[in-house]
Length: 243
Image (cartoon, rainbow, N blue to C red; front, side, top):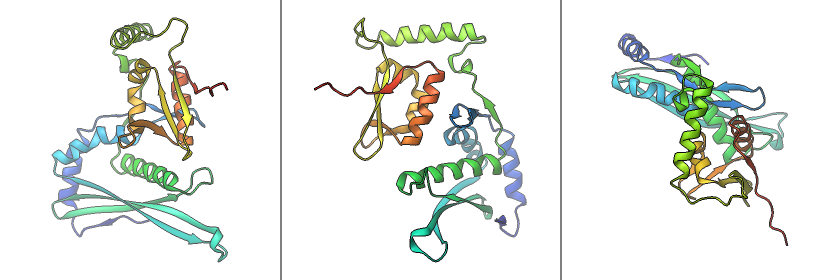
């Protein structure tokens, strides 16, 4: 869909150019399990851009809406779409555009699938409209090391320090994270406190403050499995209690 703008955009463009000059890189820390490719999530893009936009007086707004398209005139074949409108505004000048995507996730249409579509559209519009630079997170910068060996050494020291703050684990039990399916079809993540802290950068996105738990959808669970596997973090289904 075409871009819509105010009659004049010269001041907006000047302010946007100043903000873009200060953008940091959005770290590609998430992994697409299907294509084994890394991507920068919405939080990384916001961290890299929003404070600089606001510092120049630019307001960024994103408004989602839900629309339907009925195929063959049959109600059961209605297709639902999420449309995200992204708007940049500076004083009285503005520009905006729309992007749409199916509101489905693996043939499901519910609150989770709509939410996933919103996040997907928000991320794509921000990184393309703002021209956000992206770079790989090679797991070395994350732990402050220069080489792979240095990164491992720093990581091991971090584990040891964190373990001093939590209760000791029985010697015959391997620390791990686990997941259990809830009655609503979601999954709750729990397990070793040290491992949760070490993986806080990816787990924090799924923290449900209402339930005070880490809760994910089935699709997000698959992403987590792959990400934690790459970090060699034990992660499995919680074994069922024996009768």
